[in-house]
Amino acid sequence: MIAVLLLLCGWALLPKEGPTGERESALKLGLDLQGGMHLAVEIDDPDGTLDAAAKADAIDRTLTTIRNRIDEFGVREPTIQKVGDARIVVELAGIDDPERAKAIVERTAFLEFKIVRSGEEFRRALPRIDRIIVREIGAENLEVVPIIEAETPTGLPEFLQGADSAAAEPGAADAAEDTTTSGTGADTAATGAGTGTAATGGAGEQELRPLTVLLLESGQVGQFLVREQDIPTVERYLALDAVRDAIPRGSELKWGVEPIAGGADSYRTLYVLEDEPLLTGEDLADAGPAARDPTFNQPYVPFETTRRGARKFERGTSRHVGDLMAIVLDNKVQSAPVIRQTLGRRAQIEMGAGSSLQEAQDLALVLRAGALPQPIRIVEERSVGPSLGADSVRQGKFAFAMGIILVLLLMVAYYRVAGVMAVIALSIYIVLLLGGLAGLGATLTLPGIAGIILSIGMAVDANVLIFERIREELEAGKTPRTAVDTGFEAALSAIVDANLTTLITAIILFQFGTGPVRGFAVTLVIGIVASFFTAIFVTRTLFMIYLDRRAAGAPIKI
Image (tube, rainbow, N blue to C red; front, side, top):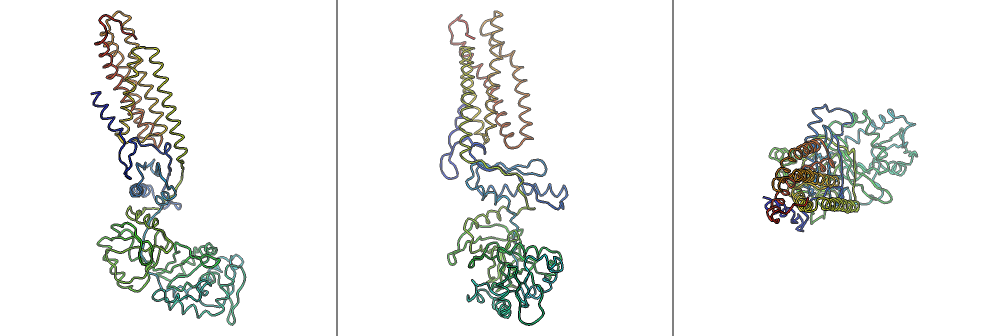
């Protein structure tokens, strides 16, 4: 039995072929030994709208989604577990790009496909919206106080002037025509926008236009440009309840995800969209691997919808051939391509011009794993660098080696031949312990090393109990064979009691602990089982071999 167990543990410890084809150690090192990241996340519910049952359901679904995402991401042996009723702990050991992993974990990935509206209704509503902003905030509190006469948003920014942007997309000519009607007054307003100065038109009643002056024509249907430094101001205006009520029915405003560089400034696109989506991420059946369009060199993500989603998508896109369809992910417009034909079960998500292939791959990953049921927030974040992990490994090896060497020297010096048997049994114990950890796929951590050293002490303690009882029996005048049998039988109850109580404690630690505590508990449980086996069976077998081979009548040295 001992030989078979040693062979099995030796086989479990052999290096295995990893995902990359390289030979990897069978023992998996934890976060504190090889570096990586630790995240603790909770459901983001600042308004307290979720009751206890809804929050518990959101946590369970979030746990499944995060686990699916990490599996898709390819991290080897991650730790993803629920702690209590409201927190999820994610530990990713050996990860090379922690920021990318963090973004994948916390991304809500709520996907919608929405039609881009012409923007005319929104333009007509702008004067009323401006008056609401002035009334709600007060003219003296406006961050930008322009005075313009133009009834439409300001003209094209300088970096777009002269470009044939009106022909860029179907329907854009109307937007361009509306732009040209604003005349010189709009151009003057564009020059003064964001500077806190007043721009005046020619004739007509002058009034404050705080939002209009910040919206620049893009030359595209239903799209406006806002300078990056003006975005907080525009968001402040649009967040007013009265302004939201004044936005035309059926319309909503969404920001583009990528900034647009132009001259000395950077701009962000503000889209006017229909509020009802053609399709949502719930209707997606699968998302294929990201690829790059050979014609435009832009990344895209192919996807497949469910049968129900295919019917909805076909009906919706058939009514809007030639229009722009915005791909909205987490309330940000990724891109707005033209619907060139009726779309069915298979289509693709075109990423923005500035997107990389890796961003497209990450999008495909989170779409395959599914959207989070609720937004989450990271409440705790720790990173362990590879150098710190290597230093921990070195210190752990030193502590492990010093502990074993000191124990072995003490046993041999005090118990002589019996001490040598204890050394052999302890060596077998270490092989069984490490093989058990490798075979069960347990992760070795610094607290786990502490658990190993503690279980080594317990294995030695069991040998000490047995050897002292054998000494007592020999001093009582019993024969060596009888003394050994009696010593093992008499010490058995004390060994069982000590190991059983520690085993129960370790199981409780594993059940209710997290992270390092669980690592400590796992190694302690395996160590206790291995130490009990070696103390009762291995040491006794060695004693039987020694008694059978010693010279007749020779005393045993203990």
